[in-house]
Length: 270
Image 1: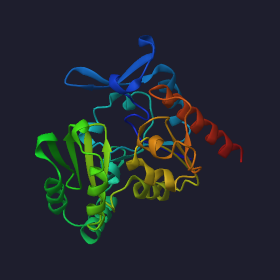
Image 2: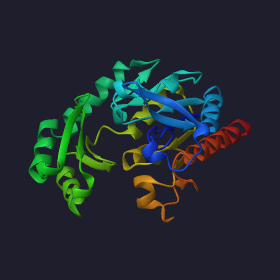
Image 3: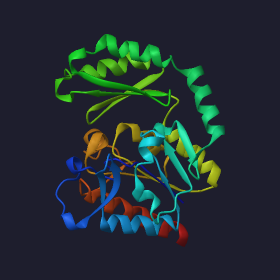
Image 4: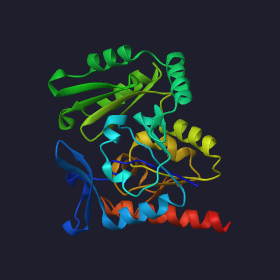
């Protein structure tokens, strides 16, 4: 079984996003510039370590490789053969870029989407520079733009999405970042590729944002925490393909890991 799991606000949490939790229960898993940046609960960390010995745990993140590599907690007793970074743009095998996937995805982007410069030019035309703080072209595949979220006009993201769709791109607002992503670059496509590599017959996937939706749609079992973009979009219960945790914040990770472990037991028994 593959357990494809988003990281930020699904498995690991900053102090701003974790919600109420006892300090003694926190395990630091990421350090940046000398400061602890992300955490898991002790229970979740132990469960992930145990689970990674039984199944293929595949971290699946929008982070680029350098940001992913900061998460030191994933290197301590947790078995990881495959990882997906750059929102599906790169697949790692034993920490190294899979060149076959890299070639496939870049050719798909060239053939099926406008250039990154064109997508960013559209964003700049529609955006007000007063609330755009910083932008980054990630792995020469997609854009991440830091914004003052509260100043984005109502309906602006819908307008951006509509304009981008004709260019083979899509967008998502996560926290303070607007992501512009070419359609061929998706976590779902990368998870399908890793599934083929492993020969796995079952995929359990978890994630909190609309950028995670593609991998949840290709999974045999899909789960999202009781917070985030997916919860706001589908948490009313209208979408039965995605199960939502009862808990939100950092405690949701424990519930997701328990569900993944239960699926594994069912698969083994079956």
